Length: 128
Image (cartoon, rainbow, N blue to C red):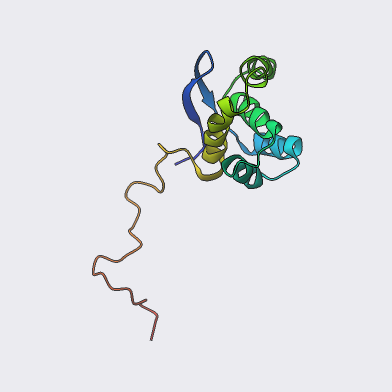
């Protein structure tokens, strides 16, 4: 199973898909001069910078399949022309999905063995 951190939700003037893949995360850390988890922490702890919000949304749109020029226009119209806190939650959601996975993504594979044996024993077979 692939976990691609793609997430879709209503934003601005329609429903959009957002995804911050490896390349977009590298661009984000370059643009914000911080690693993705540092940016996520800033967004969650109200120590964010405006670029943390706008770059996260713009690169999320690009990673979700939107042309770079279209994403830039959307961000200029619906992020940079509005109060920053209107888009704070959206940036948090997009970057959280990239760092820890989207909520609807299932972790593990169906039929994978359970980490606890059926017998309930926690003793390793090689343990003496």
